[in-house]
Image (cartoon, rainbow, N blue to C red; front, side, top):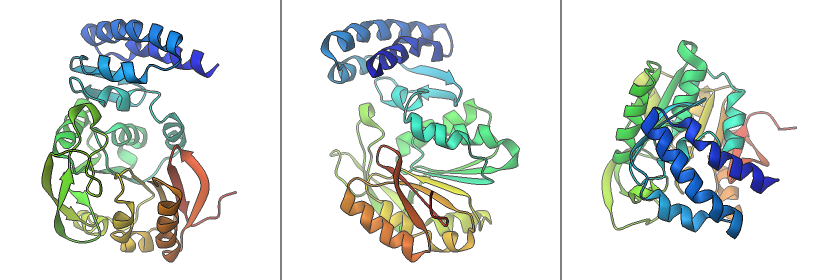
Length: 276
């Protein structure tokens, strides 16, 4: 059943294309990929070969409108069924302030900004300057006026940091903590506390972070925000069990409890209420 559903989404992908060109490209690539999945059981290796030939596309789905760079992973990140459990979880939320740390091209920034409308505000933070450029373009495409976007790295102090930039075909993986390529760029590191103070925001409702190994530093830089936010909920990634325990210690020192049940693969939830 899982393979049938997966195949369905592959062939359905063309419906997310925005305009004739995008629909036609996705339809052709979907039919090229589908037989390899059926015959081989998995087409992930083939995906990477085919995806690098995808032209620039624009997707439109229930989450928003997204520009996808040529030969990049933007197409996967922007699609409706990417991180579907986390997407469905956030669909139920109506925060007054949503913070997206590691916003990438804006999947969750766009979704939540559209979802809460003028009733709330979204703070989008993306360290990779190439991703940030697309993030800003996607905010413009969706005509959003409730988003503040920052091209900085969330960190535990004010200092310049070196970002290892992933290639165009894997732009979800740029990292301060891990060496992912020989391309590096220096970006300004700052704390979430300082970013929010500059906006005059003291209390937030949901913080989603996807920062490729820098979760501990980000958490250490948001102590004041957590203290001021009575109903804060933090969604964060942990790459393994030992790292999860380290993040738990920091969060527990702030009076938060971490739910051991994953929201999505490797994504955990912390709040002030013990989960049922």
